[in-house]
Length: 158
Image (cartoon, rainbow, N blue to C red; front, top):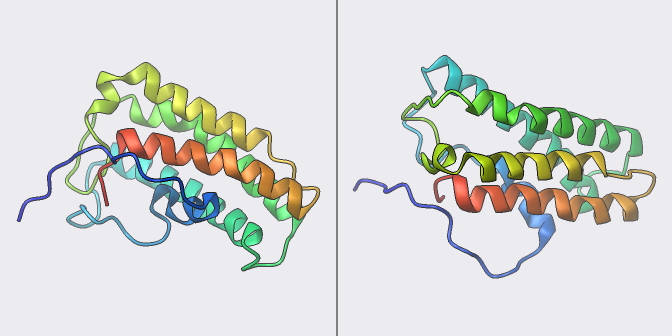
């Protein structure tokens, strides 16, 4: 059976913390991929998204108390997410494809909106305050929400 690339449907509100684990495919490998990407441009953007996902997961684990709270580590992870998010437009600018990619072609049709999502993620990551577990959790929600809102529109359904 062939999988059709469709935007993620609106989902009932759930735990923002769970978003962190789902954001950017950090829980499991790509569902639609036929293996590793062979296109270098797609490999680069997939590596960037995986880096964002790894860092988001490290923060999510602290917020969910699956890992001890470490303010400096959380702040560093948020800084990496912010820097990576600022690179999203550059790595997606080339309209490249690969069977392993989960990026929907609508990205390039709605480029300004896609870039606005990346900007929102960068801003949310820069706003993270990791001075306490409580402030980290408060900042995590908008950051995870930025990931989810972009995935809902621009990534294939899982």
